[in-house]
Length: 466
Image (cartoon, rainbow, N blue to C red; front, side, top):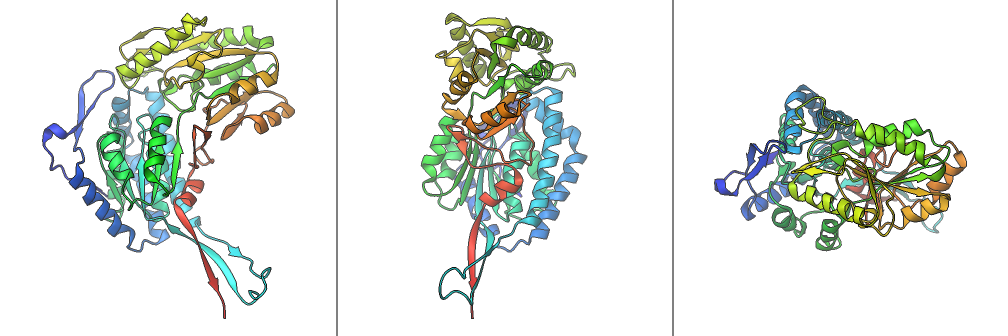
């Protein structure tokens, strides 16, 4: 691993602040043209050197051990640069350990298949098989809201596949990624296999996207920026995990206590700054009153404030501009007839856990990702109404469904236009080994080590004959 040389003036540093106190907690060198070119050249040299699968797996497994040894430092860094609660960063850390472990295992499982040829005349004496070879250089652009696990989901499979990687972490939360890169270096990662460049997407990210030496780009972020990624990469392959207004449907036969408890977590973890966070909550009219009472009580009990306080469950939003945008969406919904059941206020970057009722299209809050601790309740009488409303969104990442009917579950699984349907779980349910990705404006491609590693390789045919 290597990070860019700190040759730039101090004024060009990436300044990282504690998202609660505003205190400067770190500075990293901002990449310029020289550093970007050096990284590309180093990655190009590295990708051409043989790197056996057993060595790739060993490095990733040693990184897991080192990551666990440095748990305290990583957790503290992540908490301060994100503003997430202690519980949220602990959960992300635990998931990252699983992700890297799976990547180490997948490095040893990657293989091809035998291709039958004797259906074609004249090929009876030939044998064909496929092998998986690295794409070369993978560009990973990661978001602020998962500075450890999403980074692992991108660079882990890329390295497991034998690629060289250039990582451009979010400018607001790069310190955790820097720690992970250091850990991989100490785990024995060969020189040039991982380059980390710090700076803005509009400068560093855009320059890398346009470089033809990048063989594959994996990006998580907004739909608007995802469109730029796709445009700038041309014919080169990309994987895009983008925005959503994720729906969860509470049917008449749902376990209401379980559903309310799950939504109270999934709608407000990381202060709602999760692409699968429950934003649109469809509730059947027959259980609406009881469910709303249960959920309101649980949301009202959530403690918000200083992330350093172990009792805090909801910390600040990432910036004042993010908070102002979310506040504007809520205020607009209220003017259009929505009601606040819980919360609804914002001070600086601290947005109180908010539950809205009487929300309905065409309110903008039903169409745009809010990325804040806000859940909007909408009622339905017929299942078709909920399906049509959920599918009317331009997004399609994941959806949650609560029902005790197998027939209802299967109908929703077939009809909801999303990348994943979670039965008796919220839209934000994710196991790190599962295929994860969306459709429509939520992007395309799959995360999950076993699936991402195949996207980051080329299937090459080998034909043998006398």
